[in-house]
Length: 488
Image (cartoon, rainbow, N blue to C red):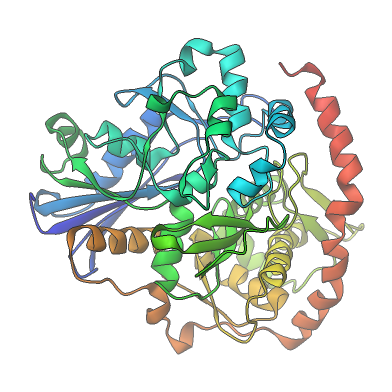
């Protein structure tokens, strides 16, 4: 091993976070680099793997003592279609949020039948990879044929850096290609997707190789650094926030979720939740929302152009709870309903409704969706709810969450939960000292308490918000049909 320090990467939807850390978990320095998502048509979402690589190089360059690093661990977004040769991408990656292949997905549901849900432990979803791979095979067969498939930026980056192509079982659980009970690839889905066995990544976590000399020169780390694959972002964030406990928490990133760890899944697919495998035979029960920070960004651009989130939050804090209901589903939804055609909606605006109210209502709308997920999870409401992700830095959003959920909430180190979870995974892989999860570091003065009046207000509105997806389902479907009329 080249050195004693650990470098961690968390390749999210909006950008890559990097940190160098001591073996015990002290963060010595961090870096962050954003990269773009390209929406060439409605419901399409693509990123360039080369942007992931360049972003990782630049983010690591901001971290100190890189010459002392002996372990590089990576986690990141899951459920992407990344096709490459020796780490060289053949095309842009199709992200988890890309919903172009609805028709191909429906064909797959018909072909694979009820066994698909039984094998995966989840209801089939248009975000799964089978439909996307068939869409690509019909239009870009030379891109798919013989390519190495990886399932997100972390797996691809480690492969390019000199490691084996791997996929952890949590990420595999999100693809529709996985048999959850057997913890193995599911042959009927692979056959329908047109995949050959050699195209699939190995299943597993831990040490996957050593950093090559060429990659070391790019990343600014010592050649021979051990490469460690952590689980996908949902699992590593859970690990970073709650450790090995079953504590529920919320995550506010570009997308977001409410989740907790379980020792045993019941194997019954739930339309509001996803059941993801964890290493060691455990399970992650998660209710993911596709647009969380993305909904806040949209509201800022649309209703308060020219302001940043801090200025918008300062203004919105003064108006108090709103009577406007916002559905945050900008590009389909996964939870608390599965609706690939769902879109955002604003209900209840009147002549006095201004941009500040609409911005706050968007945050409240996300919180109402998270409350619906918490209800389905059956998570205890008397515990402090840890809140991770970039949105956790916002005092306004923390108060909105506390009021809408009618729970005490507390931020857990802003947006570094994934890095902490990845570091915990690296410590297990190389026998390093255990790193404490963030829930053990919450201070009493960080806990946000719901305002009783605001909590009662939102409790009255919540059933109406909960019914909006069903009430607008036919509208969203009709709009999607019209948009798709000229989409190839």
